[in-house]
Structures are given as C-alpha cells and as structure tokens.
Image: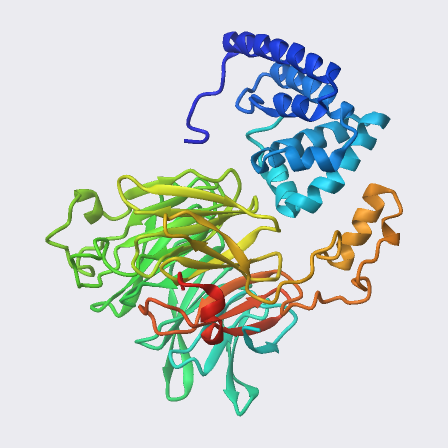
Length: 135
Length: 390
C-alpha cells in the first residue's frame, strides 16, 4: 500500500547507489553503441522513488541526465517508451529544468513539448502533485 | 450532441440540486443565498431566494420523497428548509462545527443527512421527534484533513440479501488523499440488520475501510447503483475505482490525459461520468474483465492537432515556455474564441443525476460550474455510441 511501506534507510541506500553504478556503466556502453533510447529506458527503470536519501536521487539523476542529453531523435524515443514511464520521465524533465543549465534546459524543453503532446496535461499534474515520490 | 439545455444563471455556481419532479433547480450563485428557479415554457423564472446563511453556501441537497432542502455553508451552519404554504421555512441545525461545512447529502431513506467539513469531521444529523429538532452526531476520528465529499451507500451493505434500505454506510473523501467508509448506525433511528456480519457495522463512527490510493487531494466519491463499486477522483488527474468494497476490495487507479476531475457520477453499473477542470465531461467504463479505463469525451471529439486542443490561454503560455516560433503553427483560431466550443467555459464543479433515485441507469444528468451555467445532458440517443456497458 502506497505510503504504508517504509522508506529505505541509510544502509540500504548504499546498496541502491551500488545498483546505480552498475546501471551507469551499462548505460555508457549502450550510448557507445549509439542506442540512446535503450539507455534512457535503462536509466528510468528502477528509479528509486521511495528513498528519502538525496544521494540516491542525485546519483540516479546523473545517470538519467547522461542518457537524456544523448537523445537526438525525440519522437522516436517517445515512440519506443512505454506509457508507464511518461510520468517518471516528466519528473526528471522538471528536475532538469530546475538546474538552469542552458544545454540541459534546451534539451528538456524540447522533450517536454513532445511529451506533453503525447501524455497530456494530466502527466504534468501528476508530476506536480506527487510530493511523496520525488526524483 | 448530448446536451439538451444550457442556461447561464449567474456569474458562478457553487452547487446545485433539483426538485423531486425535476422542474425546479436550487443553486448557490457563489454568495450566501440559494436561488430556486422554475422552468416555465422554456424560460427560467426565479421563484424563491433563500437567505439565511452568512457565508457562501457550499452544499445543497433536495430530498425526493420528503421534499426538503438541506443547505450547508462556510458559516458552519446548516438549515433544513420545508415548503409551507408556498414559502420555504428554515430550521437551524446546530452542527457543532468550528470550521466550514463543505458538502452535504441526504441519506437514501431521508431520515439522516451527512455533512463533511473543514474541521476534519463528518456530522450525521437526524431528526429527533420528541424534541422536534435536528441532532448532530460527529465522526471525529480518522480524518487528517478536510472532508471534501460524502456519499451514502444506496442500500444496506449486503444488497444481495436484504431488501431494507436503512442507509448505514457512508463513504467520504478528504484532502488527506484517502477515501474512507464509515458506519453511521444510530440507535433509535436505524434498524439493526439481523444478518449483520461484523459488529463493527453497528457501531457509530466505526471505520470499515480506508483506501490509500491517492497522493493528492481526493474529491467526488460516489457509489455504483448496486453499491458494489466506489469511484473517487484525486487531484493528480487520476480516478480510482474500487470493486467489491468490503474486506478484500479490488482497487484500480486510472491515469488520464487532462486536467483533474472534481466530481463523478455512475450512469450505470459499469460506466462513470467524470467532470472537472477540463470543462468536458469524460466517460469511463469497465470492460468485461472488470478493468476500468477512459473511453471518450461525452461531446463530439475535437480534432486533436498539436496545441489546438488547449485554449488560447495555454497556447500563449506554451509559446513563451518553448520560446520558439510555436505561433507559426496554425492554432485553428483558438486565439479568438474564449469558449472552447464546448458547453462549459470553466471548471465544472458538480454533476447531479436527473433520474429516479435508485434506478440502475441514469439517462439524464446536469452539470454546473464556475462559469455560472447549468447544462442538462440526455443520454437517450447515445446508447449505441456508449456501448453495451451502459
């Protein structure tokens, strides 16, 4: 039941960070093979939403950011992405926009436009109202 | 088009209710009054103005059998109005609240009504014959925030076996995101069901069920005609369906594209209308396997090209946001029109059924919203379009 399960504690956070490191190397290899869509999918999978630990979230953000910046064909990427990842992707887009870094924001805005067309305003709403599962 | 009649009554309408024969409508025009209008030969005529509350009237319900109107307001009071000699006479109900009352509903048997309030409590009011006044009993436990909506179970809980209609179960939604079902059994008013399974159902204020599906505010809870299914909405553009409400419920969360909903209505056992900020009622249905999903908008489908499904306000905002030449993409003249070609121009606040209480299908319903319009919708000609679930 949402919210009733415990949040991950500090020692488990180490395990999660280790998992993220392995994900990161996998993503690097995928990017080298010019498969940015696969890379983004891998990055979004298993995003740790239930941790309160900032380090886990930051670690995962770095990985997602790497994959996001490598995307050139946005339409194709959204075509390949499952619907259930739209909400998580939107949350990471807003995190990207909050960095204020020019290239990141440019890329995030481009993806945001296409994603809103597909997923609708509801996706943005879900991202804004969900204060528990933040990324 | 399913819309039969649209009329703009005021600047903005908070809530509305219909008389038993559906000839008169009572609504609050976003102030402390209640206006009652009657439809006379295609014209709406104002018959009465009920002026007793000090602040905005947040909930109105008109009982169909006893022809009484109950109103609740932000001034923490409630009045029960009865028609005596052509005039509506108010009776004050002391709710014992220290915060605004937000919603009200008569029980199916109309001997009680429930009031949700900002004081994190629900008041169950019943009429005490001996003292000739309405008494309020409070459910103080459980709610962690304002109670936004209440709904009485249409029959007794085990609708399969019993024929009595003692209205004990009450569902509530709250801004703490949870939907709860309580027992409101009152000794002397309700008849104890001999087949009552759990003793919990006979204790006033006992929580039967708590549903933790939403992270954000929850609104608009309603029971299906048989009482087997519950539906409520969350502010995160989600609608939640709970089948087999009881010890092991089957919950489903359905996410949809558009702005959040505010209220829902079961038009049949397997079909729900949702209304809200998107100003266009949405239809949700359960397929044969019991999975609920979004079906369509009730009106004609608008051509969806990028940007044109949003109002002129949004396209301007998006143009600024994306900073590029979005203005060059044709927006189908959405700049010029304020209304989006739909029926309502602003958020739809409430949807009220217009058929006999207790009937399994709702053929007509009305919606009212912040644009001050009340629209009446008829589904008679839409049976084929809506499919076999209707």
